[in-house]
Length: 425
Image (cartoon, rainbow, N blue to C red; front, side, top):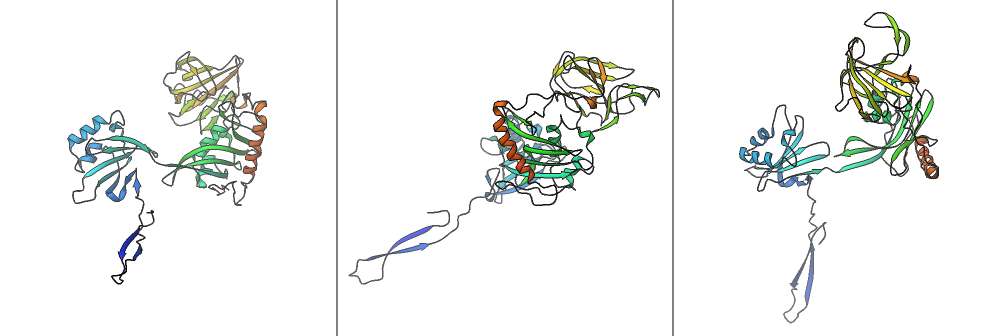
């Protein structure tokens, strides 16, 4: 018997003279189609009445289930039993849920399913042993490409072209050591090969970025993902690491409100004096990151100047200072070791400040230098033994990037793949 139909074989006596003992085989093919059940969260939808909902403000699990006829005693047991698996107090307003009820006149609720995230969900059995278990939706990864040209900002370039704006953040992380994203200008452009992640045919995020080119001020900057000594990292077209000793900026997307100067009119004191740092205007509470590995050598408050500030010593040459902070990150104290990209504080307006911003300063051999002009040395490049393998990968990826034309031509990928072909022009 196959899934496409059933074949019934009947053995019957033929309408023949009694003296004949011959039998005939009559084959009846019913071709009755057997459909696969439609599943949602692994449960057969056709067997239940399914109600989808969204948790309202100040709504609790007890309210949702009790309104569907589940007793408070059962709800209490569920809450107690689920603590080790999923604390029902974590059910938040705006969260999606589904209730599976019997498809009869009783309409008894049998399962409650809460979506913890776009991928994870928790199933609560509302009968017998009140089982509670977690699972995940099927995640589909699709190789895709994107390109764009900046008109106002990299973020807007993504939105204008129906691309995930999180791709802008990913690119800024990859090129953080080589491109100052506060200096992005109109006409800068990019093309990238990466994975998109889908659940239920809905794009939920960015996966691995394999190769990217960012044309900044007319200069091409490349990034190729390469495995070396059990670690994946990005390297340029010459095999140099894109990771450097320092990040280009201690903040993600913001704007420079004041540059390094030997004579600046102080906005509060209204006198001219040197401004030995760079001011980044950003909303209060914006996370501030250390630009490199180091040790916190000062954490204090300066009432007549920098307010809450941190000083981090990176090596025998460089020290950085972060001023006017609203507060410090948890665990930060004098003597703390920090790693590049760690959040060390939050933008504020403490001390002498007219509004929330970060006053960021860099000292080189004890003297203040313009943070925007610091050139950090690269870390370990592709090892010589791995260079042939890297060159092969780089050439292959470069060939794929070249297929992503800057203009509105069709974009093709080797072996197929999803295409994001909209231009950002």
